[in-house]
Length: 626
Image (cartoon, rainbow, N blue to C red; front, side, top):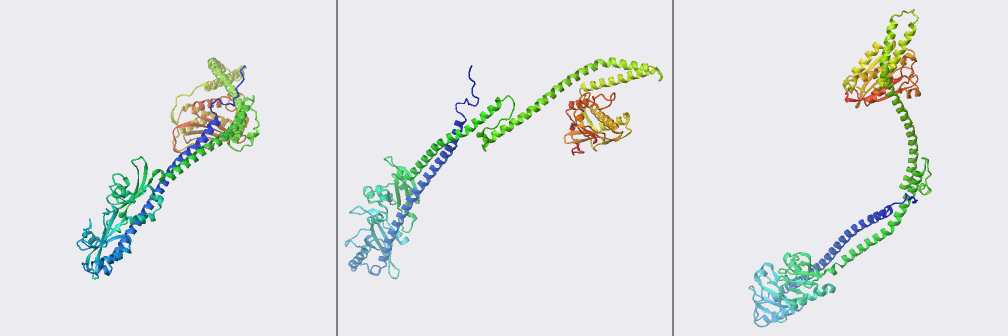
């Protein structure tokens, strides 16, 4: 025989514990990955921006340094031009040696000024500190620019003998009366500017040509090695040079050089300083992108390592946690199995491992214990209802049989009753057979009433159509007053002012009301013969309520429980058949309604029927008293 499989064991390849562990891992991993990737991207971008801002700060410092150096040279020239030895001394051959000596003496105080020239108002050279013979005009000099701006800086040009990059700076010369005498021009060797930049800039930032200064034609004027290597225009070769000369602003660009190396270049135009006319130079600080963004890459790598660490930690925590949770579920399954294997629904004590739990698993175990008690009560109720159903089935069978028998005996019973009444008519009061005939007629009449009740019990409802329930109540009152011996009994009606339209069989409803009124009158007669009966109706919500109330003796609980059963009656023998309320119940159920009885000894009885309305009555929506 094949051994029985343990129901508490799962057949799934991956149990709840494994799936729970996967959920925990994913719940940790997905946010970590999302946040890690987002953080890595943000950190890398921020680090790149910081690198760019730092490089741009260096470029700005270099620009300020270059501008400050040029401004120092300009102020020195303006000082020389304003000296009486230059401004007020005649510029002729007689005074030329003395002027040259004084200019040489003055230029010696300002090392940045390598050679000084005096130019007339047309820009033609008069004398120079290093030349005693005829002089050539300064290439590119423009008196108009000098007049407009009071001074300017020329384009970079190579020295005739050394080829080193030079510029010349020009300022006006005016005498004491502010009359223009000409111009003072100075040749500036950019080697002096190189020296100043070398002293101001961190040597590490100037390695491998990382700092580059270009003139307005795109030629590299710093570092000296770049000028010496080539004086060609770099705009076509260097994107940053093209950007700084095109936009005349500041920014950054990344590019790949001819060797395939990726660079980050930050640039700024000297136009932004605007204190020296003619300076349209550009400053570029370039670094290998790998070196520039090294901190960003390190931050991204560290974030990835943290994400991997979180994943490993989640694996180490998830599976033990899942095992702890599923262990409680397995214990709960064994508890349920013990309940299911018991032959009777008897309470089972909770295992100690579940009874002491205060979490959801413990709550579920306690709920199962409560459910077991509820099932026990429900089973008892089902057993009782099953017995009641079997009793109802027996009564239904008896009723159907009785209805069939009633149809069969109705005709001979009518014949017996007819001949009995015929014979009784010929007998006077003193006839010896009169008592026997009266008994025959009386008992035959009682049997006919029983047969009629059985037929009514088995009859289905008639045609349904809308009618005003108030009219049926009034008709029932009229019939009761005409057919019942009310005596000292007061019969009243309680009706609304507007119609209560009901979709039902009017005759069946009338029969129900007549049965209620008859029972109420009989109950008052048994209690003393004096009392009050009220019959009424109301529209309550989407239902019609019709009722009777009497002041009779009422019923106890046992009698009330059997009041609607066939053949049950509390009336004297020969007066009731016990089918009245059974017939009423059948009619009400056929119409989809509900019957309720409220009664107590000495407090009278209220019988109420609720049926569905065809059109809601607007006269009275208040609930009934029942």
